[in-house]
Image 1 (tube, rainbow, N blue to C red):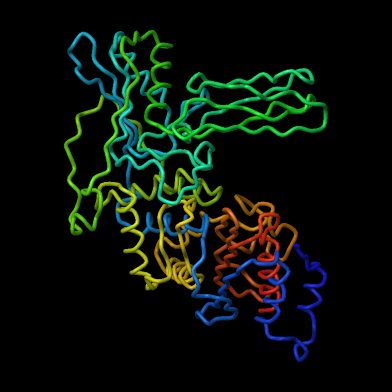
Image 2 (cartoon, rainbow, N blue to C red):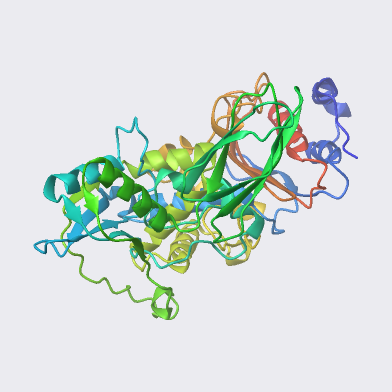
Length: 480
């Protein structure tokens, strides 16, 4: 059962005369003890000089959830050339000069390509216009994501997340965050709701409209399946509900959308929607290559190429809202600087950065770039070591600005609001099955800057550890 320590009691504890106060560590342990029984904590807090103020299991390894994104995005900053990329998604006419050329949409690992009607930057419509200006008759429309090997999901991804936006597939050809929007509108009680779902997926609508004031919709789709089954109820007085579905073959989906855009522009498509993937091979493993750079085949000249939006902006999106797909694409882009763009190449770049930062090899293991994998492990000391190293880098301030701010924005917009840490805590959040995490910097009541990393694992299903973590950090900020 979860127990709450009232905020006033925390303030009273911090205000007790110094000679009567227990050590800060003891007080923090008492606060964390209010979390659901069975929760396992790791916490390390250090001052500007690196002196430990609180250390609870600092060298034990924990599932970090989305704290993984700290390591991925920092590696992008630390690896020369990653954030300098400017060329985005391209389009070719294969067999131009033939009566019926094929259209090939070529992915560049661009996370922000959009098909929205109000799109103004990085728009698929721009490439469709380029084709329509050159050809009125085409054959196949092909999505080519062969820039990276075909690794749509990382090891340790829970299969039940795959149909959702949190687990959508990763591809060098990404469109609309690889999400498909389904809108459910109630009708009369006892009747099926109206469902608006693009024809890319088939629909089995088993949902009903329920009485006013209640309802709970759910959906299922098998991995690599094309049938969405909608179940549950939606209240008769409810507003239309939006559900975002994951896409298992993003390159195919992008080609499917492009075909519709071409036809809307009067281009006749005589062929099929197809894809070009690149299978994962031993050449995509930096260990198998002996550390040698990966071979790069020549790239045919495109008909048109979109400029890539600044990747520093995408780092901010990734960290502020904890965008899983963008983190995975950034890991692959970082790995491609010296390799093939495989997950293993990205992990090699992360390890190289951590070696520069002096973080011990036993302090971490990663299987992905986003934190969705249950195979990831990080020790609080490893996270704090990375953060302190980042603070000393020329790009450290820019990277820190990408983190959520307590009570202000991103995934911390509601946490710490109305507390002494509002606007004074800059940290990456993390939430996964039985896991909560928070790592970053905070400014204390006395004006000191502390670096911290907090992990909670084995949190019971009916509880959460964020309140205990937040209360501990408030106590530390008040007492140092």
